[in-house]
Image 1 (cartoon, helix red, strand yellow):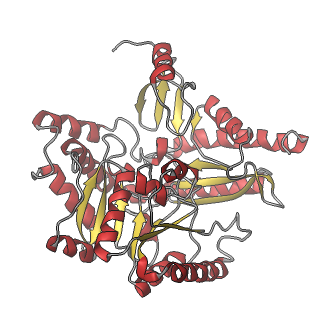
Image 2 (tube, helix red, strand yellow; image 1 turned 180 degrees about the vertical axis):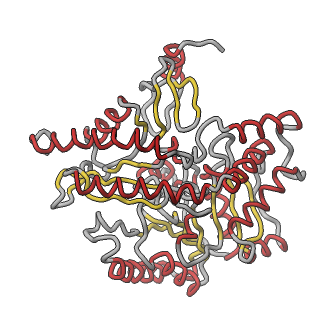
Image 3 (tube, rainbow, N blue to C red; image 1 turned 90 degrees about the horizontal axis):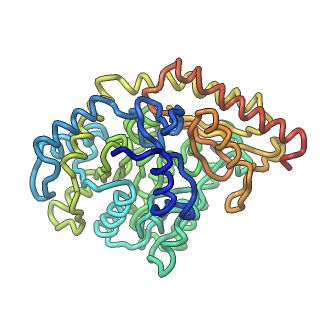
Length: 449
């Protein structure tokens, strides 16, 4: 292909329906990507400081993954789910081992995160014989019907037209936004939140609730860390009422938080784990559900009424095996721990230095800065569901300087590829500091009110 950047951008503008946006907007035409970087057609280099959509955990064009894809393509690209293939069988074994063979047993493969949650919901309803699914308002689980209805943010609204029954929302804690301090008020917040959820479960009829679906660490809604004891308390409520607990690890999985899975940072085990993104780092689409022995045994005795043409896609599983091997062989767990000691202190320094930063949240290389208009009142730069110009301006200024990331409402995500180096962090984190200084100046001058 030999299109120019302008031709690519123009055709995108003319023919593409843009996710979560109006069609016809401008888009940067990207020509190539390698390591933590991508380049447009004019040769401008961008550092991918959000791993695109928190999926490019091992960066771009990693030879170990691209070579595995090429080799598999020469053998066969795809085989029906009813047949066994080496990549699929091996990847399933590796995933169960990463989750813990003492608890988990089988994997159902999907094409991405939304389908993973969709099928986990189906399984929970079938295994329990119950219908209701509890999930959080501060959450996102995907864009298919059930996954959208389980999501809490505004992206669920279109799926609610005509509706899907049995979805119940509860408000999960966001300690800073709720007026508390993380690491100080955890016990108080956890006690109150669990009591409220317990009461809500009973009002909905605990005998009707199939599952509680939660992100182990909330991702797209601001990297919200649960207060101490909260996730363990959810697990106890589920056990008390015979409810299955599903952990959505689509963003938090594959060492994003420093562990294979985000829930492994806490003292509990879910019944099902949904995954995608980091399993192949986006090189080929893949997702799935890892189930514990209870759920697995049910579907050893009963037919699983879930199916996808591309379940366990051969090429995708080959990419997944290569990624899993790279995580282990290159000690990504240790590297994330080392890079966390750079990123987390930098983020907390931004809180001390800048009038516009109210809180820093970071676990592993999964981070977000809370942007505020007023530090004393904690007034957000942009309220949830209320349009405003300043966050768009911040992201545009960052991108001008080659710092590519995303966020919504009033937070900036800092989730670079897990392979990022000290030198690369040293080059690009100061850009964020520079733009935040510009925001401070606009607050001081009264331009931002």
